[in-house]
Image (tube, rainbow, N blue to C red; front, top):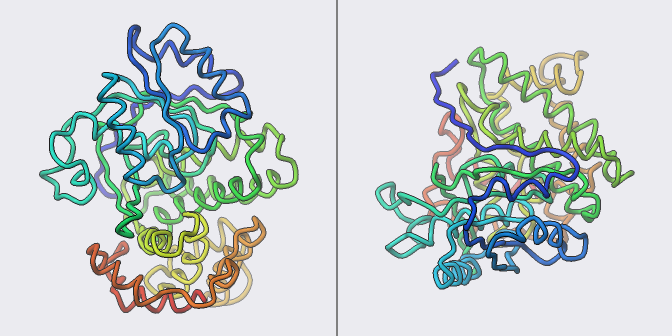
Length: 386
């Protein structure tokens, strides 16, 4: 196991009715900006519950944060927050709202061009941020309990990430009942997203990090078992609760510490979203099976472990078990209703040359746990996904 440093200070308020308790987590007298997405929280009562919880605070609202939050939209929120002298942010929604709010939090006090938070070098990273909390309504990204965010700039076709300890949420409210009304597509995307987050930290190479491996395997098994239940019974509280907590645990730091991580699938997926407009999880479902097939040799030991411990595959020789594990992964995504090829999303000719150009422009030329995912490897993966 590698050396590691882990600091996960987010306070989690989990369970029914926990929105009512959020006011106790926000400083008295704080001027709060509530951020949200397309307005579903107005229809399902979540926004009313948040407003009731904040009745003793001065609060403002900013809606319209998109899936794959857009830089231009977020800058509107930054201007509003500066004008109203906001000193606390509350993201109400899924990972996109949380990610977007992290950028807003970092950009409000940022003296230079806020785009440098994403596109600048390490010396231009934020040195502070407005504190924030999250009310989660779509479990998927784990953004409610980590310090990372991914932001798009549609006018330039860019999708970039940043990390900063300054944007770690102070608290996260996780009430599974807020997810009952999610459309099947968003529910399925959340399960796939959490699954791939876990795989990116687990399917690398062994370093004898036994606890982290078993945490990962437990998360994957939970998603495989509980994910399809959500499509059949959207108001199954226990299934919702298990998936919600699994998605948070998938990317709150505990699985990935002390061992190598991959993230090549995510980097290719970001470019697909930017150029083709597919949902983030849809891109991951397209890329991951092809990525595992392309890299089955360097991932051999972990793929065999994955085959046995997650999918129960013990028959056949090693190559047959690896093939079966990759196919089982593809089948699971398809069972969740998330196609694993571009053609399943109505795209007959993916823009592979442009995708490769964007990877090169963003410096994504040596990806993966071994830094061996070159542009040629990425091209082969993308060409195998049609």
